[in-house]
Structure formats: C-alpha cells, structure tokens
Amino acid sequence: MPLDSVDRPLNSLGFAKPEAETRVLVAMSGGVDSSVVAAQLAEEGYDVVGITLQLYDHGAALAKKGACCAGQDIHDARRVAETVGFPHYVLDYENTFRDAVIEEFADSYLAGATPVPCIRCNERVKFRDLLATARELDADCMATGHYIQRKMGPNGPELHCAADAARDQSYFLFSTTPEQLEYLRFPLGHLPDKAATRALAAKYGLAVADKPDSQDICFVPEGNYASVIEKLRPGAAEPGEIVDTDGRVLGTHEGVIHYTIGQRRGLGIGGLADPLYVVRLDVEARRVIVGPKDMLSTRTVPVREINWLGDAPMTSRPEWEIAVKIRSTRPPRAAVLRPLSDTEAEVELLTPEEGVSPGQACVFYDPHSSRVLGGGWIWRGY
Image (cartoon, helix red, strand yellow):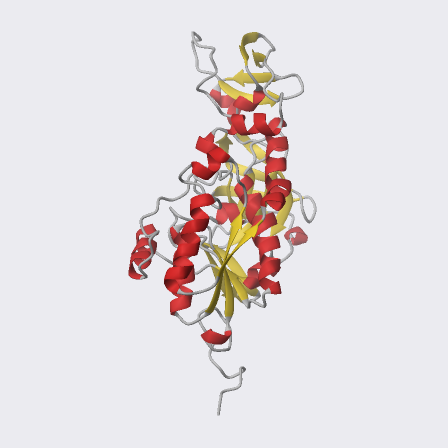
C-alpha cells in the first residue's frame, strides 16, 4: 500500500512524491553549470524539461566566445539534452530581452549610471517570464545553475550565499522575491568549488565539461559598452569637455558613454602632478568631471527599489546592522541600513567605499550568517 504524501519523505527537491512524478524545468544557458544541474536531476530520476532562451541575435555576439544564450550555446544545451535523454526546447525571448533589459541598459548608461543588466535579466526575464512558462508546463519547480543556496528557515525558504565565496552569485540575485524563492532550486550552491562542477560534468559525459565560463555581458561583444550604446542610440557619443571640480577645462572627450565613475586610465589628460579620476558625469552638459582619488570615497548610499528578504518587515526597526556589497567582486562590508519606506533606505558604510555610482546594486547580508537579506539600486550621485 503506497504511503500517503503526508508520510512520504521529501525528495532532494523538497517534494513529498517520487522523483519520476516531480517535474522540474531546468533553465539551460549552454554552459557547464546548468548542464550539470539538468544531468544530475535526470540521473536522480526527475522528470526534467530543459529550456534555453534565445535572448539576442546580432552577428558579433553570435560568433563570440564566452557569452551565453545565443548560437553555439543553444547548440551545446541541445546536445546535453540529447546525451542525457530529456526533452529540450528553445524559446525566442529576443523582444522580451530587448524591452526588459537592453533598452534600460542603454538609457541608464546614457544617463551616467553604471547599470548591471545581468540582475535585470534574472529579475525580469528568467525569474519572471521563464518561471511563468515553467508553471504553464506544470513543473513543480524551476532549477538553475546559479551559485547560491536556498535553505529552509523557520519562516520558509531563505536565500544564502554559495558555499564557495569565489563563485557566489548572490549579488546578481538579490531581487529574487519570496514567492519566486518558493519555486526556485539551486542545486550547485553547496559545492566547494568550480572544479567539483566540472568533475560532475565529466562524470555525466557532457561535452561542455571543459567549456570556458562566460565573462562579459552577453549582448556586449568584447566588453565594448560604447559601441553597443552607439548602435542602440545613434548620436550618443557626442564630444564634450573634461573638467576639474572647479570647472576648468583640462581636455576633451569623444562621448560621456566612454567613461565610468572611478575611471583613471584613458582620460588623455597626462602631465599632471597627481592622478585624476572620473568623479562625476554631467550628461546634459556632456562633461566628464575629474578629481583626486579621495573624492571617490562615499559613506552614505541612497537605495531604492528594495527587495527585502528578512523575516521581520524592513520598516519594523529604525536601523539594521548589516553587511553590504556595492560590487560583485568585493566581499561584504559592515554597514547600517536606515529604512525610509518599504522600498527606500539610506545605507551608511562604516568604511567608505570608492567609486560608488548610480545604477549599481547595493546588496544586503546578515553580518552573522550567510543569509542574503535583499538589496536595492543606488540611485543618485553624491
């Protein structure tokens, strides 16, 4: 006599039913990480459906290595599905991706911000539109190859940093909502390092076992932001002046879009006693403002569009002791969060950070554990 689902032990994805009766949609980019997730779940007996999103299709990007979600990567994902033996589909999300990610990227960059389009892609495409598709396919959950952990806490699922700090992708996933977290699974988050993932790929006989990791933003060939912006917004690269903080003209430039806050190299204003850095961009006046390094230090960071993942409401306290990341490549640092509303706050960095720019994410962490408490977007200069 079969056990009632109430009495049945949970499978590895947290469902009280056999693996064969648990459908999981795996978001497959064509890289080694998502390929291993699909192969591992299929081997465990789950009803796996692989889906790859075609996000863009322009000549330079299709041919370039180290990207995701186009040409060769679609082929690689399909080959993994054929090797392991589960259905695989390609969905054309080009228009969605352009509207939800690329257009905002261009507008933000033109406004002098430093956008992070990978976060918007996760938030607006993968974890919204693709997740809706997964539900339409009657999948019990959706799994990805992201390096982050989902742990069950006393109040439901929590988001935690990956076991391998060097691979942790929590910075790019802070906007994952509690409702999405209920449905998502991240099978790689507990692994000790990337070598363990590649070892699993070799174990499953996957051709992508040694495939290089993607490095650049997928729709920005060779990391050349300016050329992409010029194609999307013709005339954007208008020349202007490079000035110091007193307004003295030190040189000229070929477009504000070629500069970012904190930039030192490539200013073309050599011969000065002390090095100068980009400290502000005045887009309307087409001016790049430069100054000494100490002008890059920021202690107070205004944040909006906050996604809060703590147990108690963010506004239930006047301030929170947290740790924050302003950049994905730097470890969290001590800070104080002071809520202004449910979605806005001021963050005080206990140690000043250099090169903070509007458009970057500010991600919140519990200073005493690996838990991600959410985050928001930095929204004005200083």
